[in-house]
Length: 124
Image (cartoon, rainbow, N blue to C red; front, side, top):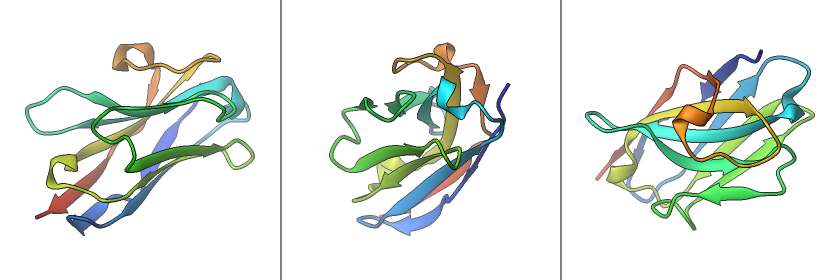
C-alpha cells in the first residue's frame, strides 16, 4: 500500500509557472506507475500526465502537451509536475495517483491510490 501527499499548489497569474510534488510512502515506489489528474468544479476528473515505473515513458493530455512536464525520482519517492505557461482553464484541484504496474495508465479507474489533492488557481 502507498500513501500520497501532494504539495505546491497555489494562485498564479496566467502565463506563470508552478511545480507540484507528490511524496509517496513505502519502500516499493518503483513498482508503481504514477499519474496526475485534475478536476474542475462540475467536471470529471481527467488525466493530465502519466509516467511509468522508471520514468522512461510519459503521456500528456493534449491540453497540456508542451507546457507541463512529469518526472519522478524513485530514490526520493517523489513524482513532480512542472507546469508552465499556465492558463485560467488549468484551474482545478490536482491529484496524484498510483497503481502497481509497468505501463502508463490513463483512466482514473485504473488507479488504486490517491492523494488528497492540491488546488491550482490561475487568474487571468
